[in-house]
Image (cartoon, rainbow, N blue to C red; front, side, top):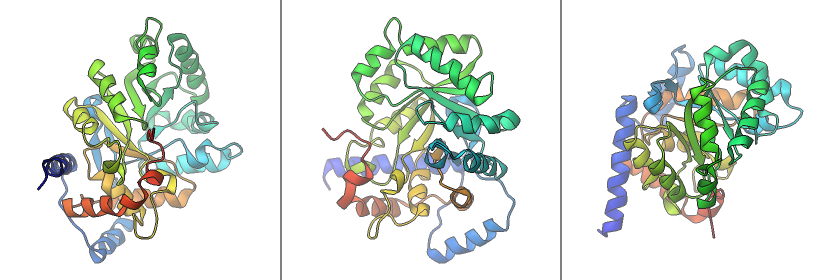
Length: 324
């Protein structure tokens, strides 16, 4: 066996065991078994499984609500509020948004007026300067109808130029630190889906509490986030949030990854704390929560099978990564 192939298998097994240990569930599979579990779950009021959000100590549910899809679209206030309320009703306790996501913060804010204490609320700054980030933070607090954030994240870190600006004398990192000192923000995070090496350099340089990274079954084929970044985040006891799980639907195709069960199951079988997914309707919220409640970690063979199935359309399934 080639050494690089063996190294990938060893890393996958390490990551899989980390995830299994985190959730404390055994391996199960097979269509009939899955159907039986789904039937039992549908009739059960049991909560979703929880995992620790790294060093924050917060126990987050496996499925969390993202701030995209319907929730980022203009003119969708009623639909978005319904989606957010339904998610929280069914046990979602982590909500993600960002100033960059159109009216997403406004829709969340309508719900946060009444349900702020029920969720771990995360938003972001796409500004790279201290002053610009402070302006965004003040606007976010107003739109979200809250006086504090549980997690404030540096949004979409793409290259070393971003890092240079963030850590400069008047960089965004100083706004994060000042907001924490003033108890406006509890924890810091960093996000990215462009290049894992940039994020590696960022978390080696600074002890962020959480990281939001792109993870799906096509990941190992090009600029893999699972190869070095994910193990490093585990080592640093960071809260790890997975995104781009279905790649906005581009992961799904005949002969490839076929269902949300496969897409989410792959990422949940890694040592993540939770995944965020934007939903287009109540039915998707309910499906994702049902899948979270019935989840069993995938075997190494199943993980490899899902990866192999994406090999013919890696660029489409990883459209958000750097391609030169």
